[in-house]
Length: 446
Image (cartoon, rainbow, N blue to C red; front, top):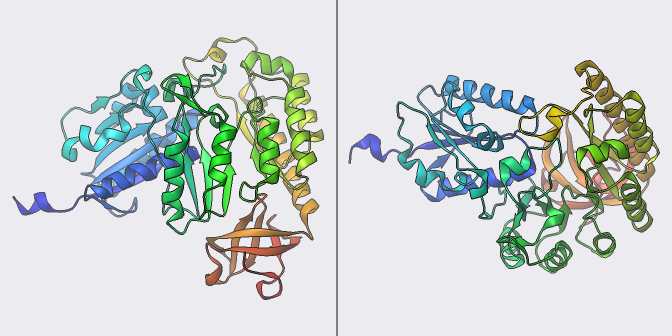
């Protein structure tokens, strides 16, 4: 064997998009390490770049192109592979980006080491992207060593057909891991030093479909996970309001490990727009879910996804959304400005909202989000919570999140990193973060 052939190849990863993408990138990176590749940072002249893409907005597509350009600047002779939602939706378009060597779809991405045998460059870009109907296998994934918390994938794909969304086209039909396999992953994670696990998926409330049939339920999954020792906190990521049952809310309210934090997509506070979007609930159900949560867990954090500028959203209908959110007892908003996506029903709808108007509405809701977050923080001052401190140091302060997702700042102490400590919330600083009483005065072991 020639010497250059035996040299260990360096591989770097870049992830765009959601927590689900992070969990999958982390798992794929471990596959490379198990095969003898050396994982390096993006700027450490890798031989191979793996870019995991998102395609929720047009902006995500542009980001992908920019990252490829940067990769080729750093390592001109590198092998660049694109995976993820954008790769499934527009493989041919990506194959024409200068510098891209391979594009893999949803059914192929977990087999990329095998499919791209040796990562030898060829004259033509290799496109390996089956039709989305072929993405039927559930690939187990969870993130490790990247953050203080682990993102554990429990479900993939979606059977809903929302008018604005490309995710069913990018990730396929709803499918899940089995509870047994998930418990195995949780036990593996518990062997590490991870304190918090975030359950993630495309539509996690729809958990339980295996090989096209419903075999299990989300409530039974979280009850089973709650019994595993070794993890201090479990957090549920985004869950649809029509799938967030009273039983699940009641269970979380009594659990010592599932934290009081829900992220529940709304998308619009107008029933007319919700119907046009093809959502499976009306605002009355959403309000009922929020009231149920707050009745059982007054300090619970509730995050909301909302889309502005959907076709047909008049000024009056936008104000319905604004006023609905303003009066609702929620904690923060994730605001998305509607962007046209190919092959969705919404792209052909009448009543297109001008871009300028979309941006103005987006700004209004972002300001409302800041007001909501501040009010939520103020309501919790003086109370005692548990903070998981992260390696997030700024101006001599370390940061972390309480169980109910309040970001706190405390005097830096290296011994507290990745530790859970009881703190008393003191005041909101000029950056909008909550200061706590100094460690020696208020911390106790968890």
